[in-house]
Image 1 (tube, rainbow, N blue to C red):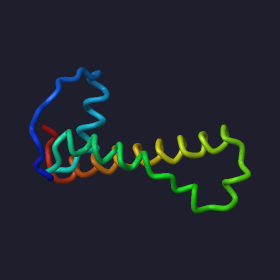
Image 2: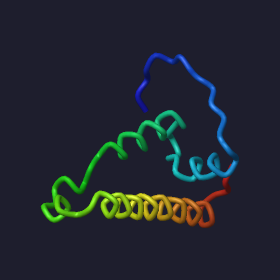
Image 3: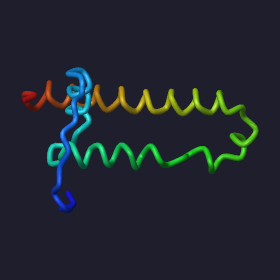
Image 4: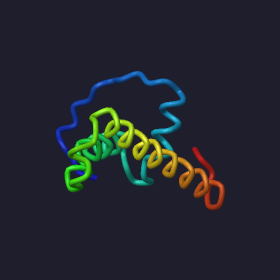
Length: 91
């Protein structure tokens, strides 16, 4: 966790989004740290390293990226649920 200027803003999110974020959040990670991590990971473009991607239509690349990101989110949610099922209660 990195300490920064601690000004804050209040945001409203749906309950289902909060539950998903809570499952993605590490045990010692603040929600701000989680959101920052998610934003940084989104800025990375893994396809720039693959020559095959340069000739793919933009829509296909976007579908490919969306599928990867959805899979990562589902994996993280499943892993967190299994962790709490085996070793602790969700608070």
